[in-house]
Length: 352
Ligand SMILES: Cc1ncc(COP(=O)(O)O)c(C=O)c1O
Image (tube, rainbow, N blue to C red):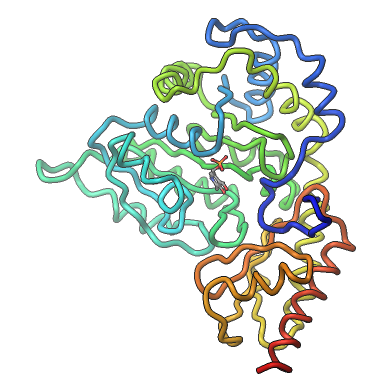
């Protein structure tokens, strides 16, 4: 919970470290990780690689840095990368894909984040003097802007087949991949096995203060380590960050199911309020999107009114509100959020 006892549903990034994480930080064995001497970082990287069924992993500062390092390590400047048109890399990472990695983003629309393999096939044009070399396909899982939707292992497999057939690599922005695995009740390796490499975040549903991991082959991670360094991401006693990451992987994964149950409860509650529309098919993990266009409010008016009732949310575009459940949000908080939305809608009706 945030200060002042607000119910903070803006993002799962607002989570604070658990007591066990703080203890782990206090007692972490440290060294200079740029010299490869931090034992806690090494343990986390080994654990992350093992959990994903890959050879190696690299701790980086953020999800954005993980994606950038991965783009740079999977493709050469001037090459083409196929991105989903609503993807985080395309929307929210300051255009680093073009500005720093030097890649040409080629966007494709999708159904809830999952590409139609035929669209991917069609986007990979034959090699020709006029065209950039296609190098990489990126998928996002769960898909943030689609509302935390899951790209199922079968769907990944189908895209992987197309990418492989044309000699392209497949990368997964798996910032919330553990949410997908818990929701489908499958091992996270079932997702990871279909992609060449991926990243996942520690600082979202897993409640760590900082950090993401890039995971893939040993050769890829060697390149990624160099690219992290060029971006200024070489960290010294990074065991301070890695220690809570180990706690997260051991203790915080299974509980994501509670966040999903609370998101479903919240979505169903909100969907019963007149004037609010929820596409319940999209509520597959911990994100709830609801459409308030019929209320006729501009800009941030709805969420400002919600804040007055003690609930924090974010706008997602001009007429969609986003709420995200996470560690620290219990059923009673979801109830409070439903009541707050209902009260804002009632006030609007009464006051015109
Ligand atoms: C799907 C996805 N990828 C990447 C990121 C970037 O992570 P960070 O905020 O740690 O840079 C986010 C953040 O919300 C995200 O939702």
